[in-house]
Length: 493
Image 1: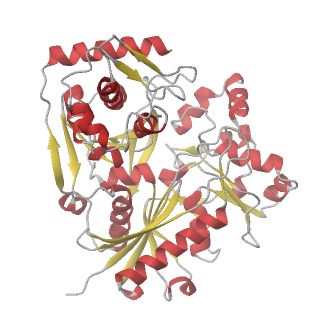
Image 2: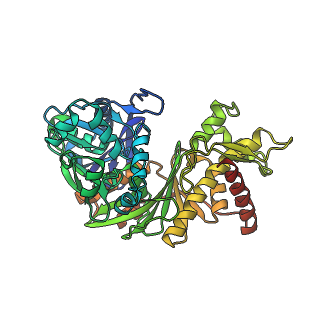
């Protein structure tokens, strides 16, 4: 029996990856290529767009070669990517004007302060669901136009193209024939009206971004274009595109309102499906587009925890309490309780729902008997507490009680952390068999676009659980632990 395959590209912040997924939803093989991180000044982060492209192309070719699958058996190409990073290039030559400005870069913080001081926060939130922050793409594009000689005039003349990383890769994949993005990536730019599904003319005017620069925004599942046949030996239709966190939400089969996922990486990203309703948050969350499939757009609430896995790296690299990150699980389980010790890893401030850039980290509740195991255990617990705070805000905003949390990312392998997460939430935590949920989500979107699968329910049928963690403590103990956590957080602000 012959199979149809999806080539899924996952362009991340530190590496470009490619995977081949079959029509049964199985990941057959995965290749990755790392690329350079560029730090011109403190707080500035850049990538070379040409290096992003070359590493992504190399990973894609390698996974096809390794799999032994014929290119003509590949029904679709899927693309997922680091969000918010800005690239500007010349339409005629296809050459970038400068390095990409990465989502982490803070160079436009003062510009964002100016926009807030002008009273534009409400206009931005109402139209985009976002807060004004240098995290998002708009002020990065503006910075390039203002600092590369002649760029603004060229942009106004229509000679330049701009976009997030998905847009840059589609341009390169199609030989410059397609300048497009999908709704999820567009919704992270601070320029896209998530209600009308178009670039917002008022915001373009306020932020001084020429409309001619921007790509066409399309649904996440459907035809974007076809690859240049010279790249892989035959054309492959590009049929699924989504930003990495939205792709993970789809890959976790969180297809019904109220379903949520948490990705535990350096930080932690949480998204809750809110269905056809774009819910404006009253509790420090972002409103974003989840995906557009079969003519229907669904929305999500998003919250970010700045420091998750990075806190375990801190234990290893700065404090020397661990030889390797996986050791934290055994050490945490060597004691019954932290005995009142709390770690608040506010190393770069606090994210959602606090949004306190001035907060700083602290270890609270130390006694003479506190030791290595208490600090290690408290650090792991801090990750779960932060995730709890975001999910609590999501429940308040959405009016929906969380039934379970689906988890992925590196730290989801830590059984102690996942069990404590279930305990502190009071709901079950589910870990899937396939941890590559971002890649799989993009592949599922493309499979639907190609007609390999006919309906979204096939995504849910192909999702399978590897482990489930059930709460083991009662509400009084949960309340006591959370009360101590909140008191610790208050001391850092």
